[in-house]
Length: 157
Image (cartoon, rainbow, N blue to C red; front, side, top):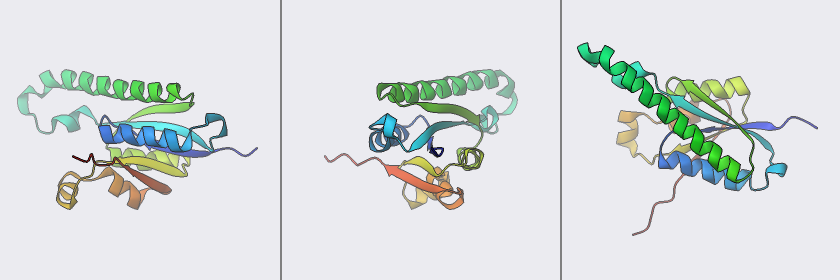
């Protein structure tokens, strides 16, 4: 039997990202034994110095706090992913990689020879996307695989 194709899911600590994970598990892993993909869940942990930016003289005092907070967030994200996968008896590989999410995801596609990269959409408009940058937009143009952007449906009033 041939090896399964690799599906990567980019996961951050947002409701959009968790929705993309749940949606993907429901659509592609509803019967885990029949799944056509090997699942790898990646969390890009930003470097503490990037989170601080130009903090000034107090950087040395703040750095350990920021580092611990980023580590705690990464562990929480992965714990939530494991819980979602375990509820459905889905086997996955989990990895936390430090760096800018755009580069981390594109590099992971190459590292794992992924066929599909799944990312959640935050639903930013053109202006916000231009100012903040968009991981999904970047990956759709630079990842060497198919990129599936999962949008969370808007709540009707």
